[in-house]
Amino acid sequence: MKEKGRYLEELGISIGECFRCSIASYRKRVVKGEGSLSSKVMLIAQAPNRQEMVSGRIFTGPSGEVLDKLIVSGGFLRDDLYITNLLKCPLPCCRKPLRAEIEACLPFLRREIEILRPRVLVPLGRYSIKEVLREYGHPVPPRNNEIPFIFGQIFRGGGVFVLPLPHPATVLYRPSFFEPVLKLYGETLSKVRKILNSLE
Ligand code: SF4
Figure 1: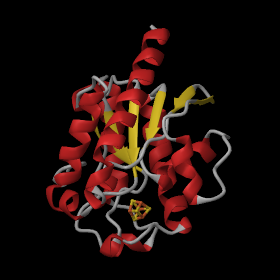
Figure 2: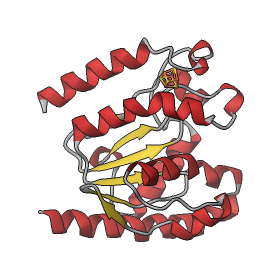
Figure 3: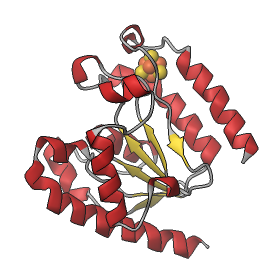
């Protein structure tokens, strides 16, 4: 565990010094992943938001409060999981990430996965979902409006299980989605629990 912590610290330093894409000129600080280093489950969101850039901590503020409610519905607490982002710096004006920016930042996520060796990846939101599916050789829905159809499905390959879910911020933009998203998280995280039990 000590080694994992040391490798993550080294990774954090590399991320803090990174100027591989233009987002670097906008950031005030990077936001690193956090959570249980022994967890077999890694949640992967899109990018830090402004509040997270201020606090320096992932999933703080309203989206963090929503995330906590959603994961509790599946019988998990934050401390049971490791949570990170596809992009390590906040996007200017909350715009969408460019392909080149994702490609520039992807080696950091790859290294994080290599260090922590999770068995279950839960990408949150379409950018993370598409990237994680692509990374493990799974088919990627050709159109964005097809992504909700794969929420909660289990993709297996490359030594990991991938279970896509919507980003918690979806609920902040559309409060009426809260109940269906809560149900989806509950059902999907129950599947995650069963996978973890089968690995023991
Ligand atoms: S988003 Fe990623 S690649 Fe771009 S500057 Fe930040 S850490 Fe580097």
